[in-house]
Length: 214
Image 1 (cartoon, rainbow, N blue to C red):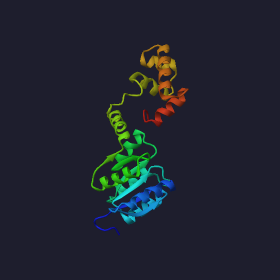
Image 2 (image 1 turned 90 degrees about the vertical axis):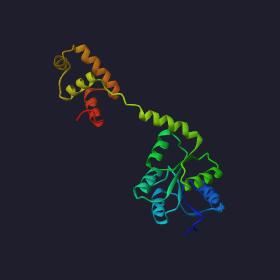
Image 3 (image 1 turned 45 degrees about the horizontal axis):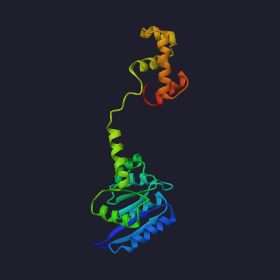
Image 4 (image 1 turned 45 degrees about the vertical axis):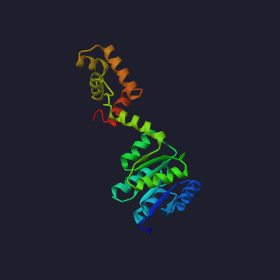
């Protein structure tokens, strides 16, 4: 077990060369203790549960159980371990999901070993650390998710879609909604394009899949 003045660290990384480089850097720090390492998510989660390190460095692309699922399980089980995600993929959705699930840090694999170790130390102190190159993308993602989503289909298109689902023909839909057959065709063409399908039956199926109709 680590002494009280040491930060215990666990490394889960699929790439053996990168894993060894990170492990070597952790061992070289007098304030750190490397307590374990794994190349797959399932093993990593089992050992993190058993060892309960202060900080876990997790690759997102782990076999058997990906890094996000490991983060989710750590939070679900109320483990004391704080997580720093290391990923070659720094897309803003990945960063958002990792932080939402409970990660305390996110670094790209372009980070230097010194930056990785400094991040581990900061996260162990209770800080949250993001790689500079992902911060602006994360802000953009947060803003995008805060934007109210416009309805996929207009109110009239939804009316037409529901009547299609009831089995009505174009003329019957026009009569029901008091609009011309040509207007019905225009609405049908529009809703097919928005749902990215080619025919009415596929439109109904896709709308049900998306929860637009029951």
